[in-house]
Length: 391
Ligand code: DHB
Image 1 (cartoon, rainbow, N blue to C red):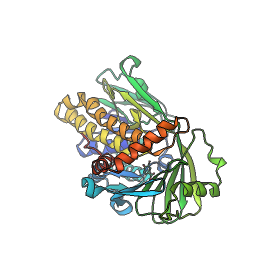
Image 2: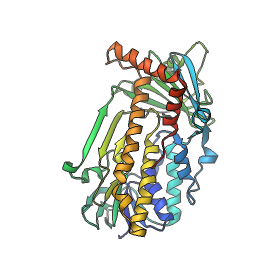
Image 3: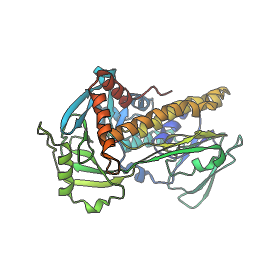
Image 4: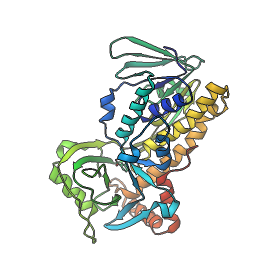
């Protein structure tokens, strides 16, 4: 197959890029090692920055973000049982949207299908070649066992943190920055009404808890656990009493409980690969960077990459102007580090670290109180949470 842009990865980043290119008359072929249903049923974060929502409003996507999603004008940060509401429109004139990542995927996959251009799912043995040249290729074996070779002018690696694209950049020309945390999250989906109007981020002596939502009848909640926690060790009763203990306070806040329909333990790490490009290959989203889940920056960061990369590819392919493309990594990576800092800071301020000395526990509480106790601090937090300009 011959195309303009070969896109490795049919998650939200790869499919959003494919759509923006299509709208500009640029062809692409997309492949993914997962099946459509596999991606559609993997539960990820659910908070969208306003700029990500605007990308979903691109003609032809017909996203359900405004019908099935919910605008959220703030969050509540609980510190040892005391509520600290933040109102984003008052603080920074912005809002965020609750709309789960797997629903975004369903919207984008449907939009892709309507363009009639190919997406190959469940491929194996994906390999990139000749990325130093002006006609790089992507090779894979299709679900039917046929050898697939896609030759393109550019290749985009949007294949997540474990995909093969990043490793195609020679070791000697890339650097990987990595940070590990002594935390994991236990995530549940449950059948219950919402416990609060907005998301609740709670710091408590027992550890962090996040009360999020999905719909009127399904809720998403998380609590900090040590890495290596086995979901099977946690009965529903034990989960509910731990979650409740971590949000309890003098205001009598009580979680609305119900049957737990999904239990997952999420790993925690930060990583950045620089540069995010080499020759004719460009990385976007988790293939180049991973953030811990606190603050829900992962998908928003992937969309911000695409917001820079799509116009740069269009300028190069349609107008023979490759200047923006040459500067892609430099532009994207500046925002990546802002999100890394915010995700790290939120994680450190809200979790309790049993491996750290008591000084760190008190210091991080002091940091949280400094921010929440100041108008400037609340504005800073609201600005980070609602997102920085994309380019
Ligand atoms: C969700 C996940 C997050 O990590 C977060 O910060 C907010 C919401 C979620 O899954 O709803």
